[in-house]
Length: 200
Image (cartoon, rainbow, N blue to C red; front, side, top):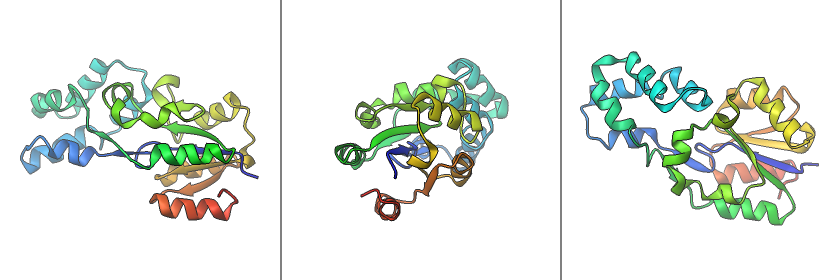
């Protein structure tokens, strides 16, 4: 029996709208592509989510990835408000699950700067029962340690948990612990998948 529903955040409970965010600055196509490659398209982004480095240290690493666009990197990353956007269904969905008796947690790769700058998209965090945001615990999905920490911190039995994420490698890592998983595509599809394992 499933007792705990665990949600990823980006593109599940809130939109990770990096394409729209960078395009919104109106740079030429080539500059846009370079910005993406130097930031969200680089391994450095995972370290951004890990939270072990300061914002300035991370910014310098992004600049090292492409020194030729330092000015644009500084401009786009001074505040990243708008990179995470609100999903209107998030709070009602969490409330509905809790009303039915499920524990609701989050497990997300999430940077401190995104948490600070995008608060308007994260209202659902006031309604969940807890969880792990990567920057707080200095580990990221799909590293096994972050799943182990979630299970231990909340005294969870893997077979009583279901994890919804939009990234398959994160799901595969959860499955290795015996956690049920759902590859999130949209809310309607996810609810149908949840019904199949008795979460209604």
